[in-house]
Image 1 (cartoon, rainbow over the protein chains, first blue to last red):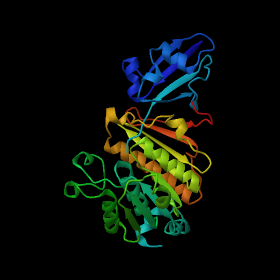
Image 2 (cartoon, rainbow over the protein chains, first blue to last red; image 1 turned 90 degrees about the vertical axis):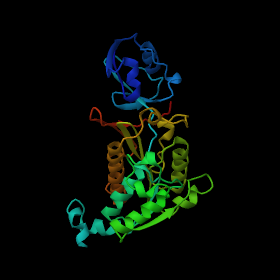
Image 3 (tube, rainbow over the protein chains, first blue to last red; image 1 turned 180 degrees about the horizontal axis):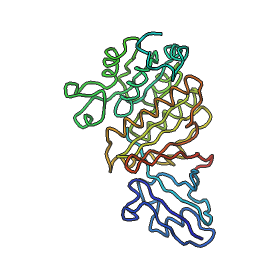
Image 4 (cartoon, rainbow over the protein chains, first blue to last red; image 1 turned 180 degrees about the vertical axis):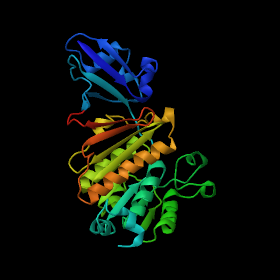
Length: 79
Length: 231
């Protein structure tokens, strides 16, 4: 299946500054697995915030479908 | 209707503007976000604002914190908010609480307000604020910034969100890496003030249970539904 992954804010460093990548993944892949396939281990990234599929905030273990858009947002807490 | 509110008409009705004077808003944090929120709500005509901050201005605040200037370095931020509003709109009462919010004082500070504004700069105190607002059934308007990025969410009683936004973490976010820019603070605070006004006036909030993520670099503004599950 093909999924578009967009990285926001400081997470874009994982794509060398590119905002998005279209990636080919095995069917039934989770958000976590999709990010790992791109070299992103969210548990190791201190600024990792949350993920959304097609603009809905979801769990990191939620399953992606063909054509989905996965966005990863950094944690923001300044004031 | 006083002439000073003439340009609030007809975006607000005269009756709505008059009602604002009867509301009590608690702004927790009087730095980058809170300074602007207090300015906006005070100019709009909200009657009573409780400004809460135990911190004093330092030089690194001058890039974005509206209430600070070169002469106010060392001054308590909540006190500066009260002074400022006396000059801007003397019809508005600003009570300065020159304390940091703690487990011990949060409930007594928040009690009796119609709405609270989360203008803090750390996750740990934000969580305390959300828990207390939920307990007291007070709506809370969350705002946070980092670099060119901001976020706003309206947290209504019964629908807490920080477990979904911050997971189990109390660590700082991207702001440690990217700093905080003045226009990001102003833009994010503007959305907070607008949402607070709508909640107060019973107009509903477009961001109730949703997160607006602002990206001022790419001018990308997105609203997320916050799922009921947590990671």
